[in-house]
Image (cartoon, rainbow, N blue to C red):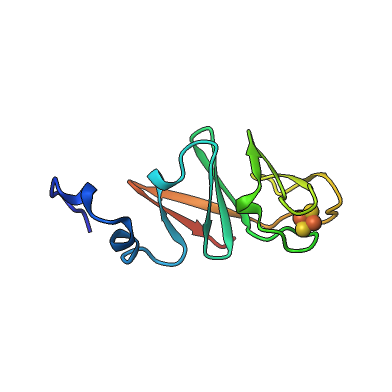
Length: 116
Ligand code: FES
């Protein structure tokens, strides 16, 4: 699993991704303030901690991993609903229903989204 070769960093990341399962991600691919689609979930790095929600907005399925993300708030790129990505709560409509949230486990360089 661990690659110690100094050349490892030069290897195309698509090769790395082959060893990841569908619910896993590389921690360094999600720096603070960014989001990544992992399976059906959106993983958000909130100032160094990870929170994960369902990737699709509860309004009309907009892609939340592509939304503007600030602090712990993501804004859906389609109609502007805002959610807290750690609790799933709706902060601003038009969405009414909260997001499902998932636990994120980090082991070394690999993170994993756990269904709750
Ligand atoms: S789909 Fe997200 S606000 Fe409409």
